[in-house]
Length: 307
Image (cartoon, rainbow, N blue to C red; front, side):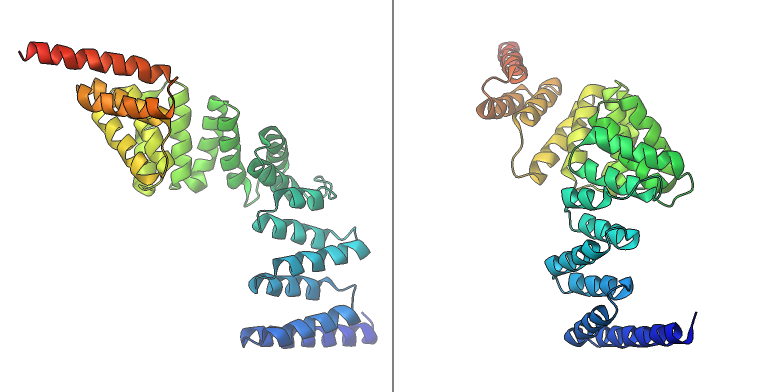
């Protein structure tokens, strides 16, 4: 490196340190001025752009940060560092389609992590087939990445959405090494076993999910469904009631399942109440119609038998 370049780097580093010191002391406007001055004087240097974008994000100026990085890419569209940074910035701010547009310019074979980011944004957009393609591409080339187990976790979620439950189990088992105590992974196991008709196997993971996250409505819903299928009707009732407590609006299906749990637990009077609630929400709910008839018959028989 020549003397002139060395001096230039020293001046840039000194200015960056000055800007960081301003940030640390809460003098954000001063820091912004220093970063802007560096960008004006050295527009080819990426560091001030990235640091200023970080500061804008900290100050809630998301739009300014995005525009700053987009402006840089207009002048240097091949710059992978800034393009990757912007793509991740957009992901952090839930701008899935915009992130895909930015990252789509980078060939995954050059930057395999792009496949992970694209897979994640596809998942959030509910584009599950595309998400699967991108994440499998990432997994195939990044055997030692820190993100590998996270990719397995998302693949398990995707396979559930695509109703590939055996495959979901396979990926869940791979993710278990790092996410064994993550409630959502336990729920994935429970859902997969449920759909495979392995209700007894589903009980342990759904109970683990409940222990890890007792106030999650989806966990309670699946616990209710699993216990209903496995024949523990009192626990099914308990979990459906907790689900209703945790949600503002419960579906006709939930009330019908709750009614069935009560009916099977020999509580026909309670069952009729819940079947009626299900039918109020959906008068065409055939399961609730049949359930109410069964519960009404049981209630009448009880009256006759009790004289």
